[in-house]
Image (tube, rainbow, N blue to C red):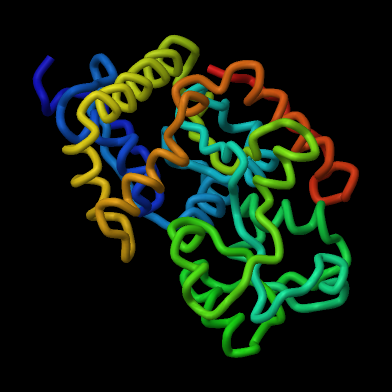
Length: 281
């Protein structure tokens, strides 16, 4: 089969170092999906969430674990590619030390209604008032007083500590201490219309891409840092290793339990109508 005859599979991922790192094997030609070429589509995670919900046109895409509850009819979860924080996760910050309870009734910035950060805030602090702010503007919104607190995601989890704001809590720490579980944040999902055989081939190919990145870490990190906003090499390596871990290769039973726990809490908080079926490929 010639290159021009290969079936195109569009893979939506956010312009983040960890997502780019996982894509490295495809980029470098070290992994493939048989009979297909994989093209990446770069959009921020909230845009990918909306796209999966409103259009469902991408064959493979990253979505927030929160958003998956609303697109499970179209997509199945890949066993690889999940972002799960092992004792770390989105960070709730404010201008000065304060308690979670003090945020009841307060305006708190979230990076999008369908992000898992927003869902975690709703389940842990249901009395606050969420305010949607672009993820890279949340720190500024907190410092300026536009909001009383905000949930920081992506690279900001590493850089926010030195930027005039203080941690109220880390959701990953809460989950580890209370539940003994990683906090599930992002998933990679595959369109059900591809059919079981191609869906399995996508999963195998993506796992090979992640394995290739881990086996060629220095090169993959340099590639990923093209997408790492404001990170130096050391910070980029730290961030990638936080969110590309053993559960990323295969979420296994622990990852499934973490997702089931998230969705059970979301149903209890009336944030989602029902827990989605977890069909894991």
